[in-house]
Image (cartoon, rainbow over all chains, first blue to last red; front, side, top):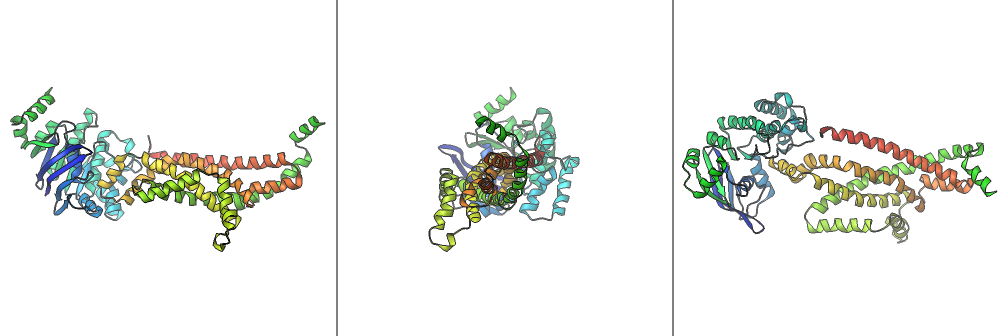
Length: 245
Length: 235
């Protein structure tokens, strides 16, 4: 479904990703954890080419981009149409109402009829529990509500994979639950997801595979009970220990 | 004797009122036929030029950003009065029929080029002020560069740019008076003509000043309305 092969990325002289490969099967949830600066967000951003890797290849569904060759913009846009991205800071369009935010991709990019796009948007809003907020502006919502709109906006383009970049890191603690709940529902429905997060409880509950990254490498990966209960690598143990304090 | 004259010129007598009344219509004609059209056309032409220049500047293409830099540098580095003279008298004297502009067209060209250069810096700053996350969100739902620009970035940049652009617009209203020097019959040239026959410089120039002020005051009211509308989505 989704794979990343031998991806490397440097910023200046800093190697952020070193020969990373991952595979995500249809309907599976992969949670990426690791200390800040480990490269986990960059990994996610390489998947929809918000960062362009220096080498390696990304495949989503049946489309492959090989970064050792010249990459065209249309190819990148095609790939992005297969992925929905949820950002740490929501990045909603402040000048558009909630429903306009969700309709923007279908109408502007996919050239859907406005009425069709609106129907989908209403359905998605109800799904994230915000059916009554269609016509308000993002600033009128709490952080948790904004992030749920962010998820609905990403879902609206009918992606094959959903990418979550620390979706709850900017939220007040009491608002985290509502966003995680929406994500759990998505996972249950069989959405393929790659999630970068610090929410270990979510990882344990929802993940099919946990990937622990440090220093641009994948240090350890496996089922959540293995990685969390029986980590084999020293660095994983250290990191998990730190989280318990 | 001198004191008497000063007092007389400060208070309006019946004759002065008549002069004011007689001059008002010609001045208004200058406003309606020249000052306002000159302002509006060169502002919007300048704005178009400004957006293109700003996009050239931030394009990351060396040739394009180079062209933009040279244009802005030349216009900002030379007086508008000199630019007007070059376009009208200078080009007009080349003997090329195509470059012999009427006073009005000459003024339009110089004022548009001038506005375009200054406004391009406003547009550029406004675009750069929009959070990088907005570009990424637009691209993440599959938008191209120009779709992102049109649907996400420029609408937000517009809000940021309205106060400084209003400054440019109001400035432009007054700068049209320089077109009097290349024979455009705008309001200030009318005023000069009236002074030549009435010998009432203080009275007539004050009247012209008052008309400029009224126009600018109305514009600042319109600016308030636009700002209120564009701020609807801001807390």
